[in-house]
Amino acid sequence: MTDIPKTQWAQVFESHNGPLEYKQIPVPTPGPDEVLVNIKYTGVCHTDLHAWQGDWPLDVKLPLVGGHEGAGVVVALGEMAGQNGRVKLGDHAGVKWLNGSCLSCDFCEASDEPLCAKASLSGYTVDGTFQQYCVAKAAHVSIIPKDVPLDAVAPILCAGITVYKGLKESGAKPGQCVAIVGAGGGLGSLALQYAKAMGLQTLAIDAGDDKRKMCEELGARAFVDFSKSSNLVEDVKKASPDGLGPHAVILLAVSEKPFQQAADYVRARGSVVCIGLPAHASLKADVFSTVTKMINIKGSYVGNRRDGAEAIDFFARGLINAPYKVAGLSELPKVFELMKAGKIAGRYVLDTSK
Image (cartoon, rainbow, N blue to C red; front, side):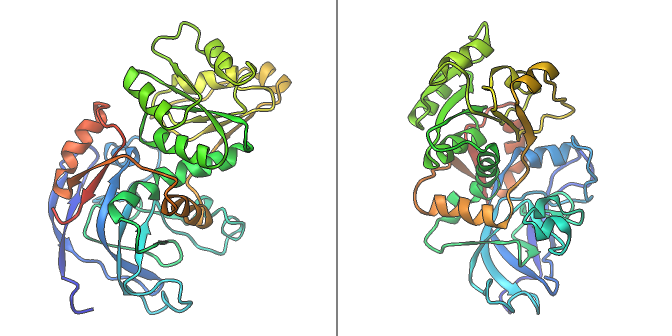
């Protein structure tokens, strides 16, 4: 492809909490089973902040180009990448957290690719989407319908897929009630919408009148303000349809305390699904009540390839609206500061041309 430049603009850091450098770097060349995507827009996820700060007990590639919610156009194919016709030049495609996996281990063969021991992670173990051109395994990029705006769909590539997967993992059935903890945030606002589209009732847990208003507008049957509650466990139970508590809890919080409370208010035979990843946090639950109530406590990681396709399809059919603001790629440090201060409603999407 003669129109692919030799260099590109990217955000790079060489050490945790080190300077974020907006600079030109070489455009990567896709390997035999990879594609090169011209990233037009990329969302900014809390995981990107964790990667920069070194919050998690996982090795991070350094220097690193972060980012894992990249939406763009396929501009080059490795020699094997287009053999089955799934990915073609000119396709609109999404580069997600799961950049690639071996496709042949026990987990990959069972459609649990995120658990592959050889998984590569965008913006963590391999360079991600805070650049104008990014490589990813052809088998793992998500094909995006060409009538879907690339800026609007970018947050779906991680936030949307992640909460959709968590709702599936909860086992909640249409008509049942799911509590969304952190419902007023970027992940929570999407979880409320996916839950509604899946036929579930939602109980929103967060703080503040602005978040209450947004959650109610997104269809929450009830809102519990944890900052005003003197007994959160009882208030959540009372807000559920029959007073017995929600059938499932989706934990999207970025602090530890909510993870210690959920097992106390979920109903018997209910599921507690942990998605948020507060740094250095622990999960605790009373053994006696966990056993006697037959509570299921589990983690939910990112979705597999099918989950990604389904989550994008919900969006393409107009059932999901991801609130976002657009900034330039050069403005990533400012976005991180707003994120650390808790001042972002919805999601920031970066325009890589700025």
